[in-house]
Image (cartoon, rainbow, N blue to C red; front, side, top):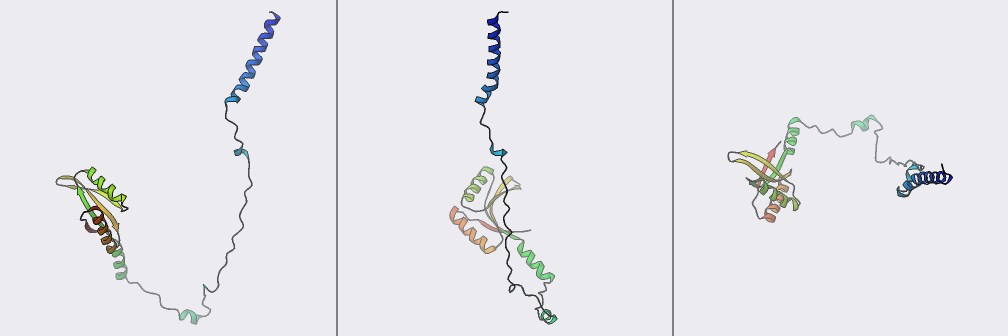
Length: 165
């Protein structure tokens, strides 16, 4: 082979290999070194707790224990009555519709006013009905006040009803 041809081929190989090494470096993103640094964790000091001795009194003798008031005894009747009263939920039925789109429209309108609204589907002789109810509320007086607000804002007459669990 000719000497000039050999030099040109060697030069082309060298330039091609250098281009293969350095050209990808030009198009790559810069190397992110932040993940490689290890920072020292500082453990905070132990908080100092102070207890007031006056807030907790421990009986010093048996007479102190005997002078304590009798604990309140709750009989089963009182417990049953309190649990039953806690289970009553009050709803305001603001409408019942044959088309779900009408129920959704009213629900969205009342929800924008800040009231909790649900839609329940009810099967009837005329097909599926969609009941729109505001609530639940556990206190009857608060439910009545909510009913008055909903009725006034939407120019409707809702029906207040209770549901026992």
